[in-house]
Length: 322
Length: 275
Ligand SMILES: [Zn+2]
Image 1 (cartoon, rainbow over the protein chains, first blue to last red):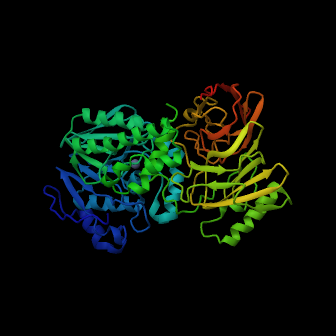
Image 2 (cartoon, helix red, strand yellow):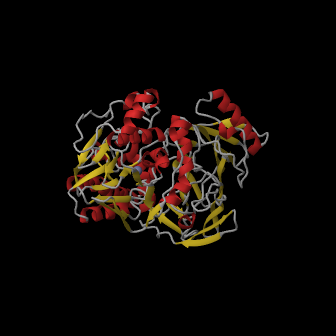
Image 3 (cartoon, rainbow over the protein chains, first blue to last red):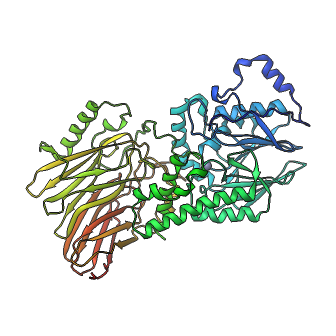
């Protein structure tokens, strides 16, 4: 897939140009954060009242796209703004922050770090100046300690130091559940067991009923396994049991019906699990398994050839010890 | 998403003092753009540090390396070594030229070995040549080569804490493939061990976890040795080795030790041969 389609729309109820935004734009257009050519068509979509989401590219990080590959956005509440996902790089986060200040003068009070992956946390550096509460899974700090610098160096190689940004750690850890009150709406957080990663945090907005599962839900883009395959299938059931009808996936369209999207996700994960188990039982080696497991899912997912083999490798290591 | 971003990037130049022999310190900062000539020169240097002045002849019959040209997971690159099983192979060494510690593994075969096919999983830190060097019973050396594209395999953090990674350390399993009577038995040995490379960050201290890896592993069929493996940090965590042996009805003994004094022993009973 190439760049996402542009969906220009009005944002009723939200000031189109804040004082800060006007000043910012008026004084120094040259300093406006940009994501480069590939990202010029990026835009925010209002997926619920006061909820804005930017669709990430279905691609891997490149110098051109500044790792703007995840669905990122924000929720405007009475008391302040909560950033649902910060972006894949400082540049991506700066772009998001500019989109926020264009639309509201409310303070940015919360930034959610949904899990350890770089395309979801490196935008956080753009919000440090706002001194928000950085919300993360109780296991996120240790996961970032182990991987943060590794990811950062990789990203610097790709984007340069200035556009990469720092590793930002959560200031509010969620071990089980937590709630944030934005005045007119409450956000309920759930810390999940090992699934997509070992630090997956989901969120439900009381204002819209929307679920923000982050990368516990992939749509269009092939899911990438970096936690526990069996755990992910379990947590997918849990998301379903939470009862929301619509969700903002970590990758894919800006919002989807949850039930069919989860069915597609678990369809892939189940094919991965059963295929890998069968390979192990038949003494099919890992290097042969990567070419045969879950092949019937190939037409259903973008970037299948890039990630399926890696997913099989991860699944094999988990399941061979069963 | 996109953990281990881009296999196209050069490796991290981590200035680490590894608790293991670094054979070619200059080598591992090398990038993906090196010429064949530069790679060949590096191999000469490494070969000399391991084998001294001994001649190494090229071979395409005494050993063959199979590895994915582009690794899907740099921390787990499956390698297959194929060798003749007529008794002429005494040992095989695997060298990953551009890894921080290039000498990844050495297998010395005993009388119960069938070295026809040997599989192991390794970490690859950079675009690199990989060399397999066999030693024949008459003391001669032969090499085969394969180029692999991967990056960051040695420093790639595990998806868990060190404590979790060390859970069950030393546990082992062995699976046996069904074979006919009188035929060599194919076996898969699985060992629970993090095989810390010394280049992975500890999640709590934010410091590097000291290298802790299986350095010696001996497999015997009864009293007869199958092989002794000398290992290093390039072997993936939770090592898995596929090998074949000549059964004599006695249990398979495995003894493993690591560089920090850990020692484990297990015994496995192969299925009795059926006709
Ligand atoms: Zn992710």
